[in-house]
Image (tube, rainbow, N blue to C red):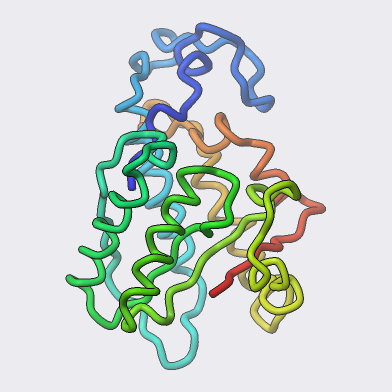
Length: 227
C-alpha cells in the first residue's frame, strides 16, 4: 500500500539523537560513516529493499507438494502514510485490491486482519473483507494477525476470537523448517547494516523489540491466519 518512509527513525540515522537500536546505542554521523543524510523517501526505498531481500530468503523454503515456485512481482499502491486513519482509506484499499484481483484472476489474497490494532493494517483487512463479501471469487482470502498488534482491549468478532483453537500457526510438520528459515535467514535482511551498500537495518532501528519478541532465542513464532 505504501513504502512507510515516514515510519523510520530519521533522528537515529541522521545523528540528531543517540541511535534507537540498542545494538548501536551511539550517535550516527552520516558523513563519517559514508552515507548521505536520509530522507523519508530514502527510508522508504531502503525498507522496500529489505522486504525484497526477506522474501527472497523465504524462497528457500521447500514449496508445498504440487506447487512450483514462480517469479516474484511487486506492486505498489502509492497510498500516503497513515492511510488507515483517513476517512477514505478503506475505499482506497478496496480499489487497489480490486485491481489486483481483476488483473490476477484465480489468485489468493492475504492482508493483515481487520481486527488488527494498527489502523493501516486494519484498513487493508477491512478493504479485502468488503471485497470478499461482494465477490465470490475471493472466497479463499485470508487475514493475518500478529499477536504484537492484537491487544486485549478492542472487542473481536466471535469467529476470530475463537480462532486460537483453530488456526494459530505454532505446530505442524513444517514448523521447524519455517522457524529455521525465519530466524536464520529472513530476519537478517532486516538487521543488515551496510550503509555503503544501501542497507540501513530499517526494521531493527524501527521495531527491534518486535523482532526480538517474534524471533528471539526464546520466542516462538505464534501468529494467526483467519478467514
